[in-house]
Length: 203
Image (cartoon, rainbow, N blue to C red; front, top):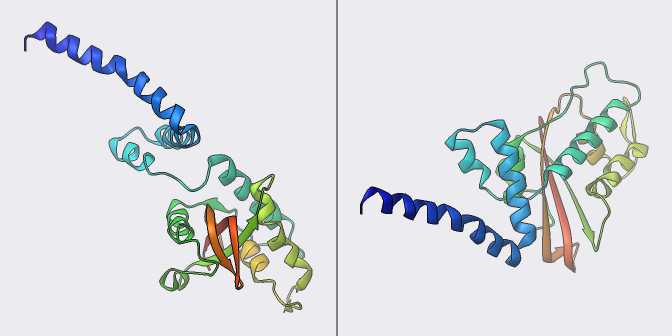
């Protein structure tokens, strides 16, 4: 092929790219928008080839939900009583998010996997039907504060979701949201449920 033909070939190939994207958008709008959001987000952090490859990985959680969960945790942590002198600011951790994604993808209503839980804290939440905000799935964890008092600990049946949220040295979180068509929840089969898995470090 001579040079003008090669240039014409590449120009034609580049010109057809937007058409291909448009065709994908018609068939799967949500997935395409989600992919673009993740790609641009990671691309802004680092423009290297490695980061571009990492950006192509489909996430189980949107950047909006990530921010909402992180902000909610830090707000709750700032309101502990009595105030904690050593309370650390919580940040998002991709390693924890990936392990949460791996577990959420199995649609199992239980903590796990065991090898991860040796060094990682974990909170779970599930809801059937619609919800307005991702924060709706974690408010019950904060509600457990009524069963906890310092330095006595738990006075009710459960307060460990709350204590994991506000544990002063836990400064990293990574979560995943998964829509499960069938999931066994305490012996009952739930259809179209939303499962939230949040992993914490330190445990």
